[in-house]
Length: 84
Length: 552
Image 1 (cartoon, chains in turn cyan, red):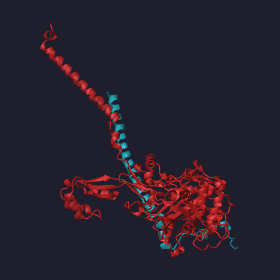
Image 2 (cartoon, helix red, strand yellow):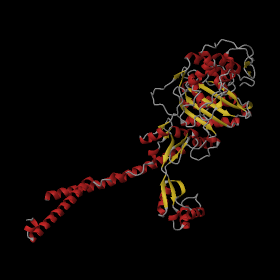
Image 3 (spheres, each protein chain N blue to C red):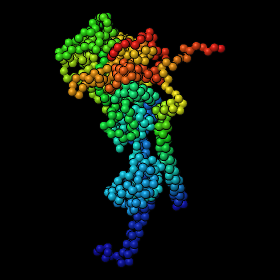
């Protein structure tokens, strides 16, 4: 009888520990899912902010930049060596 | 003698009590066993409580460009629904709800809550913060419905190509519809769908197209950049642009996908194929001379050039460079209808483009095989097709005569590409040289292409009048280019619907004047993204002055 009750107590203890761990796991999983959704929103937001149209408009109006024409492009090897 | 009679009443009572005790013991043992079983195994349907509704990402995968830039994603979103019957004080409720959303008006809301029946939707596309705010009102009769939302963070970029989804996230148009199954499968497998499109090239194409449309005051336009070796579509732009995040009525011109959905009689941009077919079938030699200014007589129709393509007898080089309809028509007649059709089919000009856009439209084919029809097909009239189909056919000029069908999905590195051999390498080399002359001294020579190593063909197709016949004042102008011409790899096609004769384009509306310069600007701008070095794209040909007169 003593052995049986010790065993029963042991089972009860491990069961309740497992239940607590499971609850913690569920909370954590929920948190992970929540953070994933937030990351997803932030990624979309970031892409909205860096979409090429917006960047080009800013570069044009704020920095006075323009797309490089073909005639402005040279290869490094085709340039003269700078004077020493 | 029976037992009952034999036993005394007292013994009978003891026997009954013992039976009852045994029965009770049995029940307790059963309870005990079940209790032990439950404590070891847990409640049977515990798993069912654990998994909630599927997250938004599970329904539809993200779409990214070839470099992983986000083009489409699914975000959690909620709709606010109300059951007016369950709301006690509509005015009070309306005031509280309107306080959360700046675009809702308390008076209108109160009226809807007073008079509405069943369940009504008050607001859609709520963010997580707005959802929590509604939740905190703690009001009866309100319900939050989860409605994941598709978001296109780059706004107009590739708007028509991406298309859109319906309320239930079902693909409704564009590649969202054409690739619906793939996008759902990818979501289940936790993948993203990777497109062939390069966001930088797409943006440059859209910009140069918009600028070309503005210069020519055209009705609409399309541009396509193709990696001709793999068939990958690097950019597909339509003007007017469309923002897939906003709902636009289906009758709006921006809803037309101009690359694969819009069809046109393409005109002279098809002549390189007529020449290639004639060369391949040995119905034409490069040294043969043609007399300019001739009229080609076909039953019921006389084909003439607007002006002679040369001063004296000249070869196919001058005829193609100055885009002679007479010579192209004659070559088609030499080849014959069955052969011409066979090649057109192999070039993909008689079927809808396989590009993964739901709206991709099938071409309209001529109804008869008569000589007049055949000759007009030779210079690109009498059949309509999409720019995507046309550009796909031009891939033969970068693959030694084999065709690589256009695709919007990125090719995996090392994946086998199924190409279809149409012409011999020699034929294609010859025609490519002829197309370099179009740029060097032909109809495209007035453009900014002089210094670029580009081969191509212009097209200026008159549009059909409402009452029949062609209208010389309304044209569809285009330019299809292959570059770098010495080692061709890419195809760029750009078309303008009804360009005007504007001062910006030298008072011309031709493909050479309106479309070709934009292709030159675009090629120069995207060359660094394609890894084409400046020297590779620089022309090694001596610069020739612009040809005077109304070259087409």
